[in-house]
Each structure stands twice: as structure tokens, then as C-alpha cells.
Image 1 (cartoon, rainbow, N blue to C red):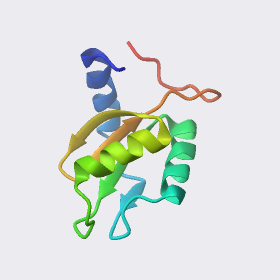
Image 2 (image 1 turned 135 degrees about the horizontal axis):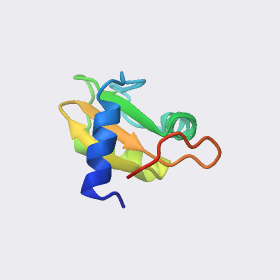
Image 3 (image 1 turned 45 degrees about the horizontal axis):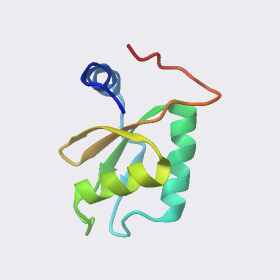
Image 4 (image 1 turned 60 degrees about the vertical axis):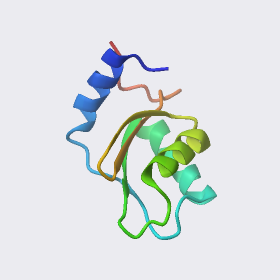
Length: 96
């Protein structure tokens, strides 16, 4: 579980990132979760954009992504979700 200070730190790191995944009309599926888990292992911190035509609620999408990829939700702002998962082999971010 992330503390408030850690979330604030990660939000500042994520500010300059662009979303690398988009959740659209198809919603969240197993293949997307697998790819997000791989991206989290490589990058540790990613943004996911929820498109307007997505039929699911953005909070439900965030919850599904967190459960599926075993990551932690840093922030949901607008239609953008920020996820963090500490990398096992490629650790880049040192949390305060």
C-alpha cells in the first residue's frame, strides 16, 4: 500500500508521461491486462487513457486493471489512470 507521500511523489513523476494504453469500446480484456503487466515490469509507472466510447465506468476499469496486473492505483484524474508496480528486475524508481 502506498502512503500519501509516495503517491504524491509518483504523481509528480507521472505528470510528464503520456498514456501508453487506451481502453476503448471493448473494455478491459485478458490480453490488455497481460500487456499492461509487462509494461509495468519494464517501466514501473504508466498512464492508461479511458476513451469516451468505453462502456465501462473509469473507476471500474481502474479496479480491473489493478487487480489483473497486481499493481497499485496512484491516481485517477479525468479519463486517465496512473498505475505503479515495483519492478522485480528493472527497478528505476526509488520511493521516498
